[in-house]
Length: 112
Image (tube, rainbow, N blue to C red):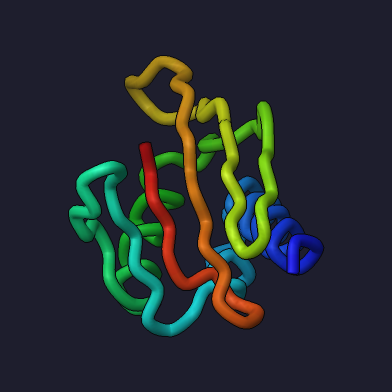
């Protein structure tokens, strides 16, 4: 399970950095949920909302890039610590994402 979890996290990161929307979305379940951590406030629900959100992000920030600083893989969960750069009018910032895999798709994401 850990190998699949890490492969999915890496595939979505690579596609994110290429701004390849369809490849990026291909690793997510149709009913994916993206939440804030620790409150579990839902930010995005479902692949269609995710497509809208990330299409806009890629359009507004063509130089957007996430550098992987560290990764922890534990069963069906992956924790990525990233440095995000290339966003207009923004300084580089560190981000943490937690991915939960169900089957062979990312089903839930938490951002810290």
